[in-house]
Image: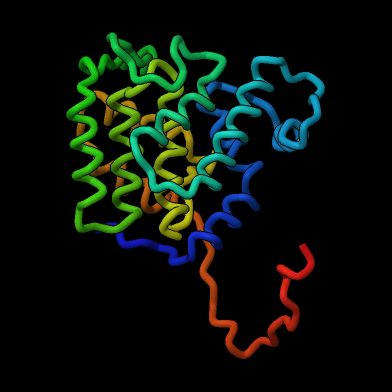
Length: 239
């Protein structure tokens, strides 16, 4: 139902993600309620302090940068261990036990009108089976990535940083297979968050998946360059 919109090589997708690193971090930082500007995010990613940004907010941005660099560069295929590594980075300063699966109950605040969502006790064996079955499913990479994204958000695999971790894990899958990126534009976040809250309470993912497929898949389409001139040097000779 959700064919891949983009067909890049892994290296092309990595370069596309690197080119958009600042915007990806800027968007993902909203999960923690940050209101930093895009120029402030750029400054922090460049290794400098930004005026008016607290140490805590700076740490969120720095750790998101490191997590994105990790998923872009990591050559091993996505696994639950890699998801742990992602969480170790993004939740390093705000989790009870960063990088480790939760062993007790947690709750998610959905807003004043909707109360909270409390996922069941984490069943790690069941999560491993879900992941394996999903990776072996005969469907598109984009479909798998969106499904993983929202399953992990709702099931709250970790003590904290679950939305950030789920987003980066899903995007590693997209990058590895050249399918583009999942990144919801900020001007659509209000509606997206409403759909997520409804999904948490109902467990019905279809509406959220359809909306995400239509609004949140980003990439580039490359046309053939067969008629263009080619470089004549060996770049490895200049390293």
